[in-house]
Length: 94
Image 1 (tube, helix red, strand yellow):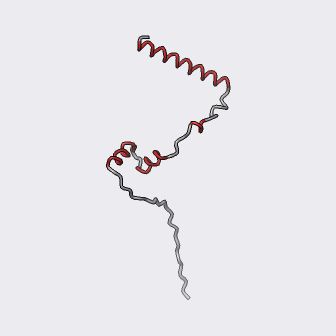
Image 2 (cartoon, rainbow, N blue to C red; image 1 turned 135 degrees about the vertical axis):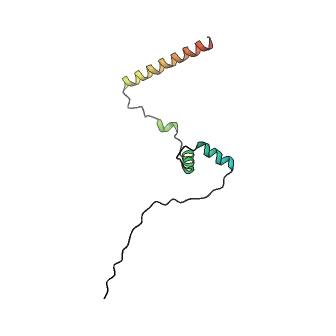
């Protein structure tokens, strides 16, 4: 009886399902304006439609900042605002 060897291989790869859509030239140009070098139109669409963060997503993110560090930050912000206000007043002539 003759023996035969059967070689089985596995081919692995990434397959992308694609869909064709029809869009107006105006819509195409809008997408093209937002497309960066090396970016696909699919990436432009995903970026546009991804979930936008709510302000509530950021609630409490500074809760663990030490009090001293927070006060220093607050003083810098107040100082920057005063400087900006003075600059605007000088330019406007108030």
